[in-house]
Image (cartoon, rainbow, N blue to C red; front, side, top):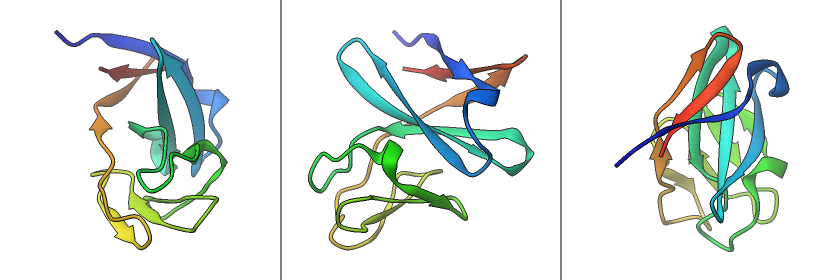
Length: 103
């Protein structure tokens, strides 16, 4: 069963930014793009489990801060080595001023 979970306020994430969200022992990365488009993925890089919240977001991609692997935040696809395992993504939406993710 899936649930919509309140992850954070929309204003808590800079445009083209990422925020860490921990829930029930799991870590997620919540992204905000221009036009208040929001996305969510696993919060740890699939290469070496580094928190993606410290990475750079640009053009719908997140770059891992440790080894510069890149993922598409819309699909979780690993785009640049050393990352070669895709991230899992989760539905995300804005409800009023809050960002909700479905897990």
